[in-house]
Image 1 (cartoon, rainbow, N blue to C red):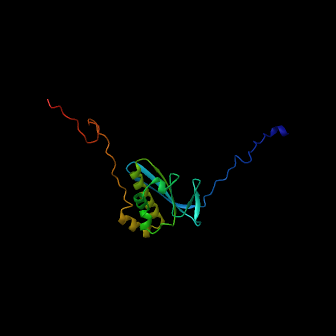
Image 2: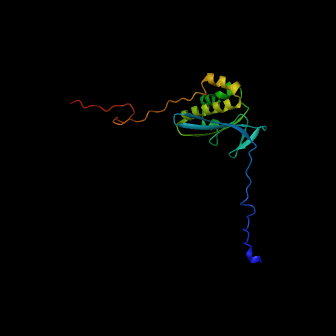
Image 3: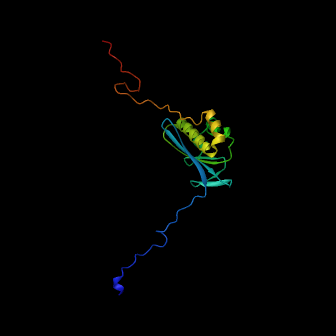
Length: 167
């Protein structure tokens, strides 16, 4: 009688059954671009003063860009003024923990992509209040100027023409 029944497959106890991790952190995310640089920024809303992102302890008002602090990724006081400007104009300097992933382009293009992404994320926080302020400053406008591609029959650059022979 027992031979009629097929044996049930054995269930693995711990490795097969994994419960999905529920993120208790809420954030606003946006993408910004400039030239060939692309930035994805998350503004984390936390009740605590500190939190851990990518294995690093970050406090409110700090930036973490590509697993490095904002001061190390964009060095200098001028760049710090530029990437903090969207937060300064909306009066949200120490309200969020900011995390960003930036790829492509050079340092200045990445900086402008980060500013664009941070502004778009701030717009999602409070559209009626922040959008007019950010729009007036020009932070929400995507700067579409990109390098012109090389054309055929040129001497190397996009608009350069080949030199004609003199005789």
